[in-house]
Image (cartoon, rainbow, N blue to C red; front, side, top):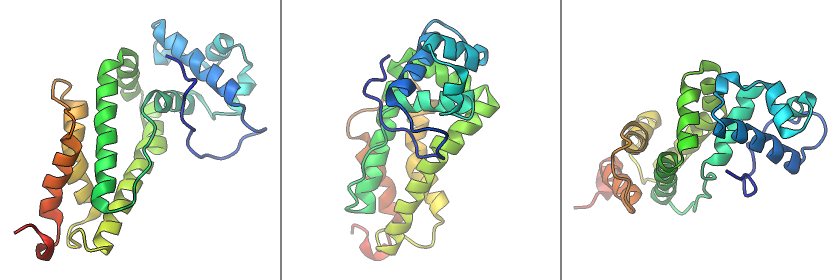
Length: 209
């Protein structure tokens, strides 16, 4: 799997000298080569990764605090990049995010490597916690922000907590994409799910007769 077209990494604290995209790409491709060779995450040391990538350990530590953060970046790069939101309405933004989740589900099914890496991450509390802190929580905060804007604009009811609304909207797609690998993920599913749930989340005065 090539990282030549990888999307930008998450924003984080600067460490040492400016980053070199070529060096970072070489390091992450080194991790992928080891994983493709069947080396478990638990056996991937910084020393082994550095040797495979042809860099020094200090080069890796200048860019990542440890292998947990490095593994999270490898998974982020293998996944579809986070989408740009249209910002036209809460509904339109939610559909874009839901479609992104659907595509991630399809990719994790088609990529044996990505599927295996995510499964191994779940068995490692430190790596899984890092993935949640760096990837899952920022995405959830973005979802909450969209829902709050929807409440402020009158698109969504204000008597339901945004955390509950978030689970109502994204939970069904997570079940189909992650918990039920045999479930269909057809085109148009994102719109269908969002519109169905939003019908019950709209203020009474704006619901379809």
